[in-house]
Length: 326
Image (cartoon, rainbow, N blue to C red):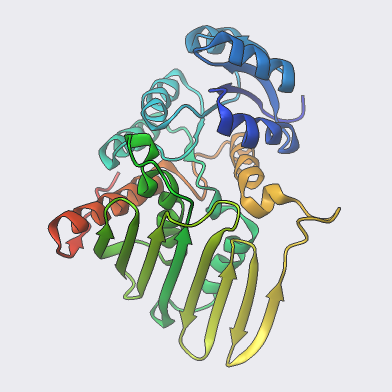
């Protein structure tokens, strides 16, 4: 086989729509499928390949894959990632990586101690538009990067269980994106209207500033995702709906791009990042490296920012973030 042999844990709606179909496209071989409900595992094994199981230990002891992908919900991501890293396998988990920053740090510590890769599927770090934004920003000295704004909205959330809270389940994507593009956040001040809307001010360690506006009163079918980046000297970039961008340099339009998603040359898996993040996981396995753009330690920092937003909302005060080192 030319490509990693992988096992998948979890056969729910998200993984069936967004992960399983991309495994072969990313160059991997699905050899095992595990779910607590054996019929779900059997259904996805029939659809996508591999042998079905309802016991993780049995699957890994029999198949001994090159890597393991987990999509079970944040508590399962935390518990299973620690267990499987200790068994000697590189790990990919869906987001969020755990229920808390502390849990995420614990997984990062296990990854450090084992020397193995553990990455989180924060897809926006991998998609075409934000990869271009990261490359564009890196041409400037850090003190020339002035500001970022993010407007990111969804349809109404029930906000009635920990796993289905708007900020935790949806907004965490662009909370992570802010850290990816501009680095660590030093201080945060946030207001909220219940669990449905947030206005967040950010002060980055670099000195740059940022704002994020989140609201769940809009639509999934008509997306709202607008990102603005401003750099000294008449340099700025606008990203629309995670795909289209416009760049101005030295007060002159320099680059414009609209994605070819709906033509034969387009690939929505790279536009969204769902395919690209799996490609990155497989490449790290093949290259025997233990980090990617979304390593578990970076995910810990994202979870620290998420918790700081909630702490600021609760206290009505700015919150300074202190990250633990590995």
